[in-house]
Length: 437
Image 1 (cartoon, helix red, strand yellow):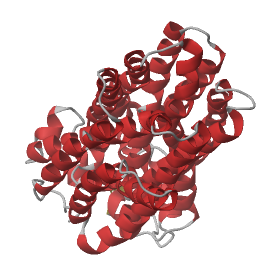
Image 2: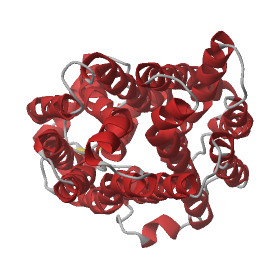
Image 3: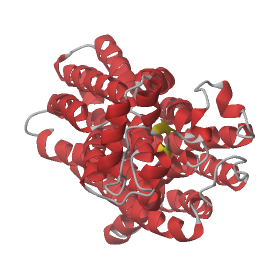
Image 4: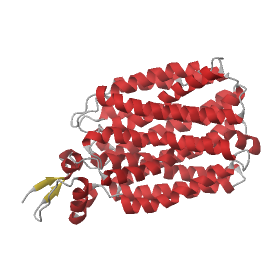
């Protein structure tokens, strides 16, 4: 009788069609996480005009979906460790698609808020669960870059939302931007047919044949025998509870990770929600302001790719510190009066740092937890991030109503950037898992 460590077999595999298929489906799903991040900001000027909303009301309405994400991130993150990541991903993307698409048919603020809250609950599961799946089903040598690329697709979704606004709002109206969200309903079928469940999920339920077939696909060099006994790594047998995030020396890092998630999404959602409106306040047209959002998202993609490559050499911790400090500096520069060409360059550089912090944090945080509790860890981390995304739009709206200038509003984002830099610098090497640094 031979003991077979499932995680070890997968870790030693090479990047092949099996891994790429899982990665591709997860990537398509995560694109719509990014789409959702920009859909409200893209339509915000039009919604404010049609529904006659003031900045405070607009900020509150923006936070309804984000509030849903807080509950969804906690609930679905823990549920993924119980019923399986695959099922949760199918449920989450379906909820998001249906209720976001319905937003394009409503005419009153209250109904819009309720639909956005429910869609936010579904959306909250997508990135954490997808990152957990890629962490479980990827060769160890390429795992960090694959997780980074996966979360980078958020910026792709942001760009799609912005360009959809540029193409459709003036000719069709803002509602069409929400109807596009019906598309990912078809992804549920792809998830069902392509993505496997967690190895531990199969083993706990005695589904040995399924586990054996998956290992053959993941690592063709693996030769199974009928008397093989399958097991996951000892660290991956930890029971998934909130308390487990604070056990075995993980407590301090968990708190620091939560702080970083909070700061990341405070900055990202605050900027993405209000950028088009703030740019129009500076005298730019709506179409130009939407293009500025797209430019920032492109910068985020470049920043994630560069950061992922550099992090493989010097570690995610050092890269994140550099990015946070640079973000604090750059976000203050883009409100200075300058030529359009220079402004676009600085905007892209600012987006490079803002748009890639969350992407790299998923990869960095994943290395701090056993796979068995990774869904719970990323779910709770994401929920604290969503708290930041709830507070930012409302606070910026309130500050705008109070009469703060555009430059003063942007300068407030330096505070969470510096706080995140301090948090990542205080991260400790995990006691039971090899750290990303």
